[in-house]
Length: 502
Image (cartoon, rainbow, N blue to C red; front, side):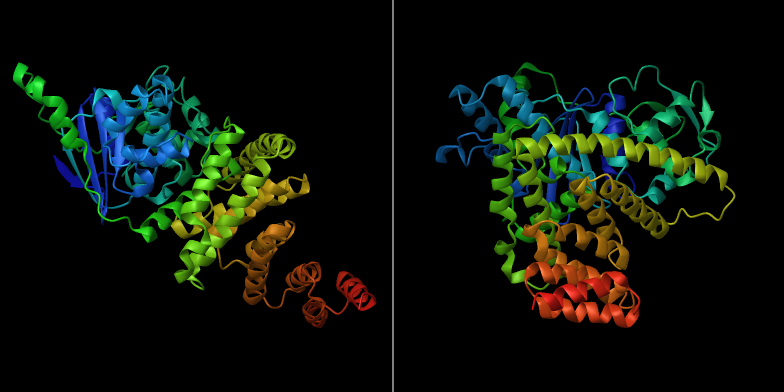
């Protein structure tokens, strides 16, 4: 069985395999990147990829395990068995590591919008590697990152009936929009009626419905199916059972061409683009201890420090990497300080409450203007999301949550790089940290270039230059601000201060 990911996305394939209880290997390929995902009775149990950063040995090293030279070339099964036998890792700890390893691989592959897939019901992962991956939560989170327009294309017409699945959501963490949608389903209901009852924008409601169906919380009447028949299963003969372990090892091997640093860099930047807090930036759980945070930071620095990619200097990719590494450094400094981490965790909880309140207010406002022109086009969705992140940053800044504000402004600037306001406030947030002031200069200069007639942006840049010890540049920017706004009291005070310090 095979097909194209553009017709049957990976999230839908995983959901269908889980619902039908299939066992086997799902192989996906996109350009030179290959991955294989293994299932047992519908449960996702293991995954492998030909990207170097996704090798099991690399992930084990990130966890602080001692990897001997003899272990470097071992296949995944042999490596895991060797480490357990040597007492370097316990079996329960290995299971936890495997879950995180598999989740990281699948999370990246779920972003692929194109590529090919094949499913082989005769290939299986070795039992020693099988882990209990929280597949339904993973699928739910993946749908939150897809384009709303794509989700809408999976429900043509809106007449399809949805059926509630009792208790299916008990173990899932839902965002407010998803929980709100689910609360409206206590009997079979059409997609169109659920959208109308929800009070959400159509695009947002469909995205939530799509996620709930993939996670198995809602059952579709006639969703797009990739598997019309069950895949072939291995022969259960005694001879086949004897040969299966070695054959399975061969099946598990994924072709591994030479590592492509640029492709790995793109995958790394893509992951960071999705990160919304310091923990996601460093790719560690909120429960991570100090040693785990340090290991991950040093691993990232070793593989993706901007100095490693000096050949890209001056390109947008290198500028993006420098900005990303500033986030990584800031995340590391906060999370390795007991006092700062405690404050940051409290800010995260406060920001979560702010977002929930903002979303509730937005839904009420959108419901009141339901008859307005349809704004479900992707460009509008991106603009709305950027503005939403900017407003969240502004609220966080007012509450003194500078770290959270920086993350929000950064997200807004990435989503809409040609919006001067987002670049300016991201630059101002970066300027507050001495370690990121050089990056702040690039953002503020971009804002001034995009909107040269805004006096406030010139003043932000002037303050930065003053703090960096460049008074002449600061005076130049203040004078430009006064040309634009001669009565600007802030500019006048700053110019007097600079003149007094000559």
